[in-house]
Each structure stands twice: as structure tokens, then as C-alpha cells.
View (cartoon, rainbow, N blue to C red):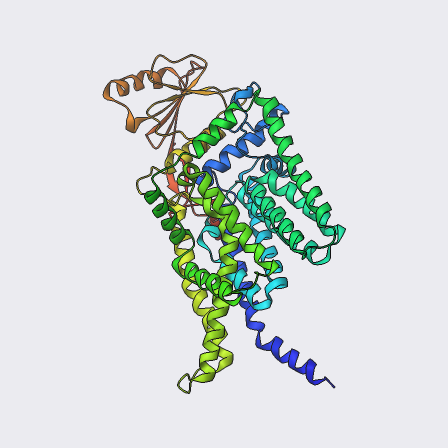
Amino acid sequence: MLSPMTTSQATATRRHAWRWVLLAVVGLVYCTIGVRGLTGPWHWGHNGYNGAAFSQAAKNSARFGIVGQAPYHYDREPPQASEIYTHHPMALHAHLVASFALFGTHEWAARLVPFLYSLATWLLLMFAVRRYWGDRTALLAGLIYALTPLNLIFANMVNHEQGGIFACLLLLYAYLRWFETGGRLHAVLCAVAVTLAVQFDWPGYYVAFAIATHCLLAGVRGTAPPGWRSFIGGFSAVTLANMLAFVGWIYVTRSGLDEMAEAFQFRSQTPSAGGYVMLLVRRLLLLHGPILLGAAGIGTVGSFLTHKGRPLPQRALLPLAFLFAGSIQVLVFPQAAQLHSYWIYYWSPALAIAAALGLGLVIDRTEMLQDRSRYVAVPKRWIEPLVVLLFVATQGSLALSTWHEQLDHGHAADCDDCYFQSLERLWFTALDEHYDSTTVRYAIHRSVQEPRTELRYYLDAPHRTVERVYPVAADEVLLLDLNNLGRGERNILPYLSRTYPTVVWMNRFYAIDLRSSETKMTRFDVVEDDPSFLRWWLTTQTSGPPLRWERVP
């Protein structure tokens, strides 16, 4: 026969089973959205630009056997030192090189890296919050993080943030565990995690600074574990060794630090304070939502009032360190923050925890009101599910609508009048299939509008921009867009098409092979594709119907 305590626990478990069912449903939605467009070509915007650039760098490392990143190099000779990208550490690059080696050079192999880190961050966040704040707060933090528009929009964007946030979260959890136990295992885990964090992204250093400062203050106050001096020494040595290794590598590779200093100066250019603050507010409202931010405000104020006159508990370091790191990113690099709408990414874990505490506070106060009021007819046990479901419905609707809107905006957030290159992307992927990238050279006429990195990735061959349709070097394939040609240039096209092999897509995009004198005209038209739902979900990144080329007889 069950004891009264065991019976009570079983009843509580059944009463709160809805929490985990809801979390599983939201988690499934998060994962489903995270793989949207996983196998598709690079789309215009943050997602496509970063993915194409860093994937090109990984291809070049494998092709030329180089360590450094060369994201904008398409020639057949190894890149020069001046082409090596040094603005970020190398962990993402190493992951992409490994993923391409394991799975082949595919877009999905690149996007798999950030998606898995996004998923790991979500799981680790709930695990850490559960330990330090309990089941309910962990559930709420998981729901909030998964329903944050920013986290949905950029879940599979190939960039440094996803791995960096995961490593910082692991580092903070390992440090709090070391602070509890003083155990060597957790100290070693801190060394591993800080190495991963700072090799992924610069905010890893900011979190490391917050941890070292916290440990030092706790040691001075006499609340740190006995070996705190050794911990600070070893932790700081590992962090500093990582920094010196990367900076030293840059110095050797680029024969100095001038380019790094110029990049820092450029990214830290200061805009007008008022306009910059309004930009950040607008992005917070767009990429997190007013409901989430309101809950985070309630949680923050409530936490400080609860501990008024007393030191904050050690667990507060978890959200505060992310708040600190994200704030340094925004304050020190305003030019970069203006350009990249995801620059506020490092605030997401802090806001998720704060909002979870705020929702918990709303639930508690509502239950207290129910106890004191005769006019509240809702049973007390229903209050938590109703509040949570109301939040999930409203925040979830906002998150999904914002994410859907960003599909067509190329995940760029700030894009009122942008040219998304949808047809050009379809054209350039066809060029990749039609010509051998190991032998072809391209001459891109100025009529081709904005051939950005997302498009050049599919050339993966030497190319240059030309002002004239003719004459062009005889060893090149001329690319031009009929829609943007002047009348005089259009008059030359019939002669070129009769003289050289020509491929035309939708009577607009021309590829004229000047390497051969064989007269041949091949035409393609664009038609709507009819794939299965799964293939459509994995390959398309826009809300419109999928398109494909069909050869015209």
C-alpha cells in the first residue's frame, strides 16, 4: 500500500503532467521550424549570406589544405593572406569543415551545425534552470525560449552565436556547480567550456570575465570554495592562452594586427544615440515580442524586490552574465549591431529566464488573489494552466507570424525595400549544375543585379564583373540579365547567340559560352514544382510556391 507521501507525490505528478505534454508539443514545433529550408539553397539575407560565406570558407580549407577561413575566395589558386577572415574565432569553421568531411558539401550539412547547437541550448537551458529554480520555471523558460521569434528565425543560420551561446551556458552551469562543490571535475569542465566559448565567439570572453569577477568577489567575502584562488588562476590562464593563441595566429597570418584593428574601429563606429536606442527597442519588440519583454520586466523587478537589502543568490549569475555579454556586444560594436539584426542574440537566455520568473510571479499572485476573493470562480488548480496556455497562444501566434514574415525577408528583419534575388538564385543554382566549376570562368555583366555572396557561392569558380557585353575574353562564360540591358547592348545579343553556345532561362537570363564556336541554343522556362510536403518543407525558404527550371523543346 502506498504511503501518504508517495500518494501525494503521484497526485502532484498527474496534476502537472500537462506541463510536459505542452513542452513536448512546443519543442516539436521548435524543431520542425528549425529544419525549415535545411536542404535549400542559400537565400538572400542574413541566413543565406552567412551560410554561403562560411561554407565557402570550409570548402576552401578542404580544397587547399589551409587552416584559415577564406569566405570570399573563388579562384583555383590558394588564397592570399589578405583574404583570410580574422574577425571571429575558428570553432564554427572547424565544425563546418568536419561536417562537410562527414556528410559532403551540402547546405544541410552546414545548417545542421547551428540547428543542433540551438536544440542543445534549449535542452541545457531547461536542465540548468530546473536545477536552480525548479520544475515550473524550467518549463516556462523552455516554452519562452522556443517561442522567441529570434530563436526561431535564426535557429539554423550558419553563424557563431548558436555554438557560442551553448558554450557560454555550459560554462556558467559548470561554474555554478563548481561553486557549490569545489570539485575538480567541474573546474576541468569550466576550462573545456571556456575554450569552446571563446573559440566560437567574442562574448565568451565577456562571460569569462563575469565569472572571474564573481569568483574574486565571493573569495574576498569568504563565500567561495576553499580553492578559489587556484580556480581563478587556472581559469584565467586558460582564457588568456586562448586569446593569445588566436591573436598570435592572426599576427602570423596577416603579418600584423592592422586589419584586426581596422575591423574593430569600423564595427565600433558610433551612430546617433537616439536613433540607435530606437533601433534596439524596435528589434527587441520585433524579435522577442512585447508580451515576453513585459514578463521579463516583471520577473526582473520581482527578483530584485524579493532580495531587497540582501545579496542576490549565486544562481542569478546565469541570466546576468548573458545580459552583460549581450550588452557589451551592443554597446561596443554599434555599427555591427545596426547591420546584423541578430546582434541581440546573447540576450535571449537572460530574457527567457527573467520572463519565466515573471510568469511564475503572475501565477503566484493570481492564486493568492483567488484565495482572498470570493468572486474568482476559477478553481485554483486551473490558474497555472490557464495563464501558461494564454501566454503560449499569444506569444506563439506572434512568434510564428514573425518567423513566417522573415522567410520572405531573408531573415534580415530590417528590410523595407530589398531585392531578394529569388529568380537570380534559381538561375545561379542552375549554372552550378550546367557548367563544370573546375574549368569554367565567368564574366558577370553589370546587368546582373547584386550578385552577392549567396549567388557567387554557386559559381564556385573564378569570375569578374564586366561593363560591356562585347568584347569579353574568349575563355569565359558571359552572364547577363536581359531586363537590365540597354537597347544598344540588346542589339548585340542575336549575334552572340548565333555564334556561341547559349543557354537562356525564362527569356531573361543569358549564359553565353565564349570558349566554344559551336552554335547551340538551349532554353529553360520556370514552372511551379509539386514536391511532397516534406521535401517542400526542407527545401523552400519562402512562402511562395517552389519553382524549378523546365527545358523548352
